[in-house]
Length: 228
Image (tube, rainbow, N blue to C red):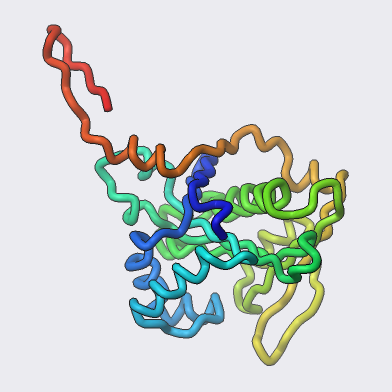
């Protein structure tokens, strides 16, 4: 989607940024993993095909994609943004005639790294993306339904979504996946989203330029002053 091409969402633990061409090599590296292919029901692609997919996602009217960054790493300008990547999150508007229905998809590729396990990254991303989808993409003042499709063996992710009041809708033994869904009304919205004051929205281009700006030193005084 073009709607989020210059949108940065900053949480307490993660930063969500638009999926750009610079992110594709790392994303492709992740998706070469048979384990992730199985968990995401994905087919292996070449790097060129992955670039084509990124461009397609950017232009699609029904899919909104963010790359998930480790906020602590991203706060260090010396670390390239690609090395801050830990996953991606998508919202699909599954019925063009009904923008109150959306499918949510989250992948934390960094879960295999011990420092990312049990840190609540998936929970924070879920809250942020559902809130963004509700306030920016879907019909306001309307009941809305989020669905997720999860591999039956992915017990951790199933348990996480059930904490957000997702209920089992169907099971496909053929595809070995379960579909969970939650219809969010006003009462449940307060419980699911809670206080969202922690989430900040900024212009991605400006934030990226500031982060990439060289650090200069002012030696005109006896103290060193670092500024961008």
